[in-house]
Length: 356
Image (cartoon, rainbow, N blue to C red; front, side):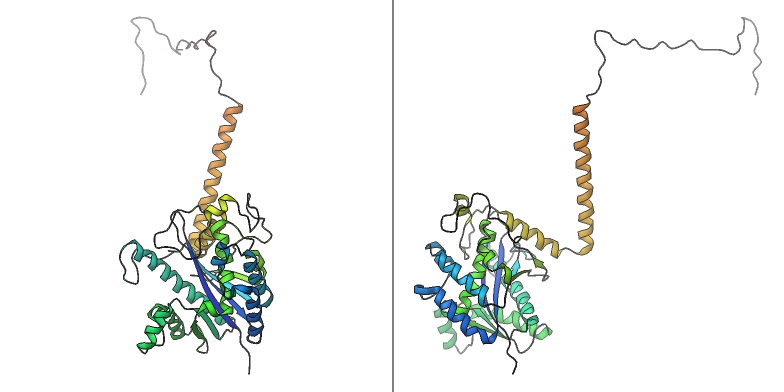
């Protein structure tokens, strides 16, 4: 019997004022016969903490644990993929699809739509990799699970949108009926710890222009645009950390100011948009733009560049060769118009014969 890969999936998002925002859904793909060894390595990397959550560990200063978990991914994962929705509200309206009113409902609606778009793209990608079991962290609390079981339901209401997205793909024939989507408790699943580390490393890069953690797994990872599936580049390989950065344990003040955890309040805070997020948004928008529109934009951009260069050249010429001005002390006399010339002169009283 053929052994199929298994995928572990987690999410992260950025949603703050003055920022386009981003939603990231990461999957770590491991060969079925390698899952046990990878999970054992993940448990060892988590060490004395007993469980794992990158954001919590980072705030507590346990950066070495995060790095150890990313090294487990680099060593044991066949591949990792991130489905990215940037900007976070790309293609969404102002109202919440869940029926909630007001700013809080709109923000939650944007995140929920981004999650479903990202999940569908991710499942399509995993299907191409012949993945059969997809383990996704449940968003439901223990109390919600208990209520669902008491009501005879297999899933809490919180996770049902994920199942709807999964079934839409099944009905459309976009994924195999052999693929299973399984919601589990992420706090106790070492496979999801690895997915959490990958999502956190990518999120850290776009929040604070700090790609050094992402670079630990970049050789075994891909970022795809959630709407089109186009590959995006989080950063160029070998790119140096941003200016002013010190080390992962002692960040610059600007980096500290830009950081925020992967889960946010419904009222986002001010955010300074960095170069990596700006680049990611530009790539995603280009991927979503039809080819004809892209050509028109390129032509317009070149015309604008030419116009700017002509204007710059004109200004430079004017500075180098100033316009000549008349000398006020020796003004040039105006030219004297010559007297009109006549071919025929007549004396008084002489009649002129004018022809037709």
